[in-house]
Length: 371
Image 1 (cartoon, rainbow, N blue to C red):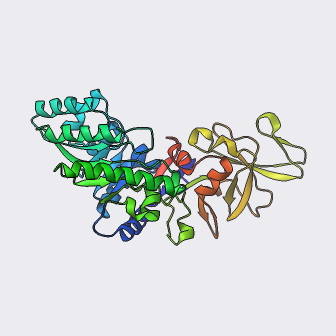
Image 2 (cartoon, one colour):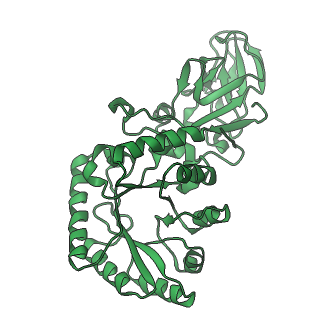
Image 3 (cartoon, one colour):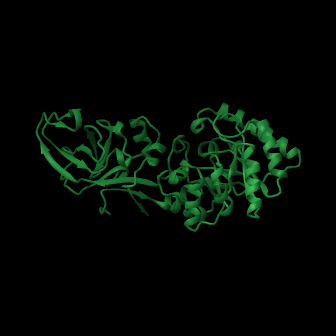
């Protein structure tokens, strides 16, 4: 495996198993949309989407039309929902490639109807309502009007209505309950007018486990599919399995005496005779700069501290306490080695960020290896 300077092993079996956990939780009546935006949170959109769809997901969700087109060009024919905002320049591609957009603004209804009519197609759409996120989506009153316009458009088909929870990882259940209430009120209004809605969806990874009322008949798991646990689901008995491990190898190894400065600005000075390993991974690869003198890696199954600043291309590690260490030894930055494990949630906590930022920041030099 040590053919590369730095690589990410993506365990597609873990993706499948985590999706099975979601399926068992929500039951057969609830459909699953797996979120693969941002290159599947850095895991690789095409292989993850194919695995998810083959394992029982009904559709996948992306951030914009370019991500949707990547999946279509890779041969994926299942429904693809654009979760983000649609811009006018994307309309032709969306209709042509049978990609389902989310409408956030009334003016987009007419433009999408015109394009669908021009291509002699009937275009599926979802409408998003802002129930408290304050980002995308129309207000409940405005969303009801958009829904009526879509329903009246001869070349559009209202497939779904959605909202997005603002409580990060289910941390504020009361706020989520209020949003669920507003969403239910909108659904009752439009369905009371005889408008049929196939999919009603709101729940993300945290809420689908923590708030059954938020599931409706479609859920949108993201992080849990990748085994990223931002809501202490493991503590609640959900055995999520991490899908990604980040690895490198020792490119250079040398012994240094006490008093040796390490890295830019000598932010670390050795206090004893030791050995310093240089690892060919840096902040340009997505390893956070903030982990300088704070991070740890695994070498030969032992924790070794990161010393000095994280540079663009390299990380320095004190391996003086690791027996028999050699140049070429595998280094685990995220994942398991022997009986030890460095979880991405712990790494993010030390780096003062969130796990998603780390996986989404993995650079193009990081070779993805699919297991």
